[in-house]
Image (tube, rainbow, N blue to C red; front, side, top):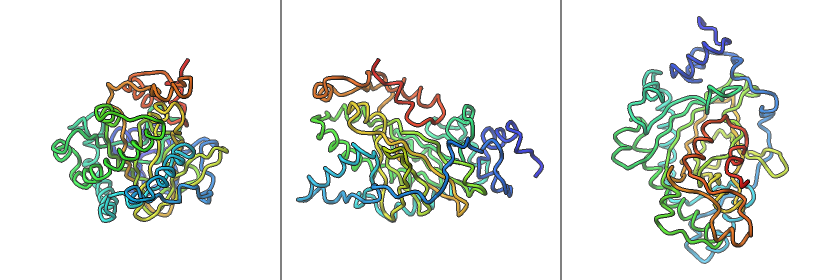
Length: 357
């Protein structure tokens, strides 16, 4: 191998700036993990043999339309109040579509480097599409073992015009067939805290919608790396499609980490920071991370729903009245977002930005 990938600048230029990604290293036949990817001991995921968490028990959303509505709503509320994660089946997204999503994600990342690099932030032909590696690689102590493409939704026409060709149609279909389900879950969670959101407010709180495709290449030494570091999501709810390989971990109340195993046909839902803030801390944004594997390359496809940047977020008045105290301040979501993307992953530290003085 001609390039010296132990040199951080050389590696950073190849992987991040030129857009070869982590996949580019593996395609060159890399057989050991370069130093810039080696995580501090405290951040490594020691073993894939973690306990399985309660989110393995799926919630059947079709039961919301029958006599078991209250029981299913209670399951959703309890998961949002405790773990912040749950898995759903009979969610309204076809299993065939989920399989197509995995295939199209692999197709996107299998393209030649220059086909993907055209979507690098600095040169992307559209503000709606961004391709890259890791989270904020220029600020991280160690780079995450992940490539991704991020597709922001404005309307169907622009998505079909600007999103990458290998995955645009299936990603759009995934978003459109999921969003009704997401709104229903939000309504159930709001109803539980005595809040009915007007349609305009609901649209404002879920006005930013994004589909990501994540690619975790096979790693020669998974015990040294992480796919995604410890973090919580910044938005309302995240919907995630896992493939069959697994590797998603959530932090439990006792500080241990448990794996959320992939279940065929299921989608994972997790609470984001915005929902924790709106509920004044009643619902818990889940701290999670992703391990790497030497078995095979892995893909996952999350949908992020978040407020419009111009939306103000803070504990809802009805909840503050009940609690007698506001645990978070009101702030512009744009400011929260700027802070979130300006820092490396560091657990739930991003929430400190919103805490009441």
